[in-house]
Length: 305
Image (tube, rainbow, N blue to C red; front, top):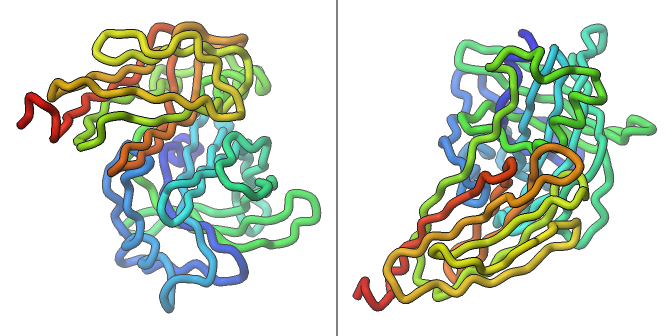
């Protein structure tokens, strides 16, 4: 199985402790195609991946993998049970064909940490196991220095677009002395813009933005119904908080635009949107002049009554 066949999005669970991941090769769990990080329910998939019920401590997770010239970059996002908190890590991936686990994911940095605890780095070691009904990526996660085992993980492939910060991608290419123009068009990482719809009774949206790549003076702006709400936002590791009051009309149109890229090409941010009846998480991957868009229907607006 080539590196190119491992790229994409993988969903699953990471277990704390020595509980062993279990999968049934005859009935791998199917995972709903879902581009919104905060809307995916993995309860059925998670329980299907483990024997004798839920392990004592486990966290749902998403693994994004991109590849260039047989070298891979990975991003792991772990979630709290209610999806309100996320922690995100960056890994460089190398094959280890002579070892028990055929791939080593070496941790490079913590990209986002919404928890109150310290987010330590760790490595992953795993293998892609093929069955008649699909492929499972499973293995262990460990201390990157002493190789102490912390637990296990298991992922199955998901039909979702990869959402890695473009700055990390171009930094990865530079480190490996790879020219993007030398890659085949299908191997060039092109993040998909977000277009989403929201149905709510809330009169306002609360949000915050965190840079999930390099702090290099990326600049964003926020628009509602063609009106500028926030300008010259420079996301950092501390959340930039904002509020958008929805109009009285039934439909509202929210946009987050990339005004300028920083020192590295592309812009990436982790976005939390909070309404009184809904919370969603997104990874926005944008280039200059691109934007993410939301169409918002207010159920209790003046014109919808």
